[in-house]
Length: 270
Image (cartoon, rainbow, N blue to C red):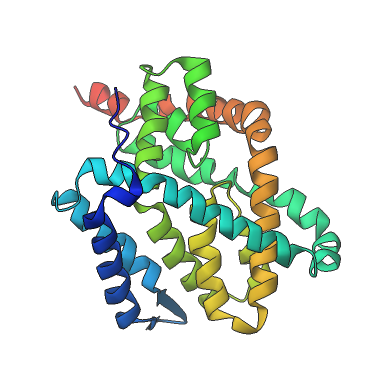
């Protein structure tokens, strides 16, 4: 049975660690690193996640304390969603005007299948690639794969790999890539705001926070569009996976695996 951790108010060490991390990251502040035509933005939230991960991996923060802190993440995301709801109201006219774009942006998530599936096959994955590449592997998609193929199936192992890696490094990646692409490409910041709504509150928060810092004059609209997009992805994304993404991934797998599968090339050489 999983350790539920001790009550939050009875763990002064955890509070002390959080306070120290907060003071250190706020002292470091926000930094912009120009790379070619773009900018990578380093926010205090990024440093906090990295420091927390280091402390957890070095066992200075124990698994029991990590379990104790988990509900606070949910609470923080709840406060963010409440703020998004407040910001969506004044921006509702602009969101309605962008209605078709918000609805169609979900189809953009299918593009990752085209890029990720061939790479997974070239790396030597088999049916694991279907679970890995049909989505970003958040909770609804994990449930879909486990329900359809089983937890111990190759597809189940694949989606769990993406779920774990996304949980550990997804927010860091989204925060960095959103700032770089928004500053390096001519696309409108609100297009990137909609793109941050991938169905994960933490990933959306990391990416939209970076965009809001890059374009402070549009920060309210960025948060509102990101929240509306994330809400649509959360509600509509599972159906997209069931009826479009997963069947498409299976068809592409059946077509590509005999051609570029790493195991097939080894057999031919043998």
